[in-house]
Length: 223
Length: 223
Image (cartoon, rainbow over all chains, first blue to last red; front, side):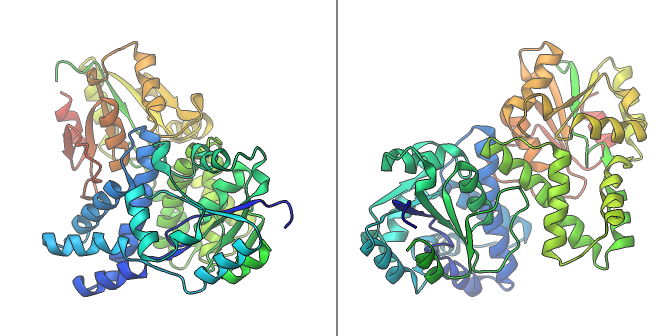
């Protein structure tokens, strides 16, 4: 794709696999899967709600709030140590196995690479640093600069500003979240939806430029 | 509550019971409950996402989009007649049984009463009209005027503008949705969360002035 000058990646669920959060949950909670799914859903829901309310809270705070709600909902009482282990798991997530080589291949093609995430800077530094991904990226951008979460166009604009590019179609964007892929498409990025789970696309009238099932296909699409 | 001059109500799930949507779904779909829950969750999620994307679509369109997604997700194929029956059910919802008398009691106390809903005007007119609730309200307000959904403060401001009241604490607000009760609390309304289902409060740092389990307690709170 000759027009593409840079590729911007979502982080959690796209570059980093939050499966370690699930593993810790399994050690602490009898029925861990619905618990983790609710926690993740509430984390996102809270990011949308607080953005709309025009009251910014960092993604880390919202992750704590969402955990508190999830414990209430399932009537699970965790001690401070259990809560800390679950929260700390977000800083010790691994990259999906094919990600490091894929990023290297894209860099060798002369593309600039960046992360653009809901996570606050400390959370991202820890997560991407521990996963060994940070050195493969030219830039890590957090919504914290604009104090509103994805899919606000103010967030996607951060990447254009950093790249000093006017035409969003010259920027590739990769996310595993249907709603993020749609938000980035509405903004004008050339979007590759990394649909590992084979989910249906959210029905909002926007179709990403490509839909692929694994990271190697992302590399192919932007090569 | 002598300081309260008016009470503003959310509509779907607060004044009107969307159970009829569930009844129609049961006639058409084998496992109707998760289907209807996903449909409703997506309807709200789409309202938040499109608001953040700054691309307004009416609540009616989002209801159709969310239905399309839900059919995809559960691999359910409905013909045009089935889809129409499900969508039309939103226009034929009944009030919760204790609502009409409760509204009459509040009016007799000299309070102004209004509805403030995500629904677009046509949808609200049909729903509140068929339910016989419209004559009990002084005003029906739709987010369509501001083209952004709850919990944006722009939506709650509509009620202040209509009432010509400056202090939001003089306005009572009632919703069955935790996130709506929280958004209205953050805005400054005196909020009574009508928590019929006994759900935990969303953990976002805002506590509504009251939490009650049925509509008669709403009437008591504002009397």
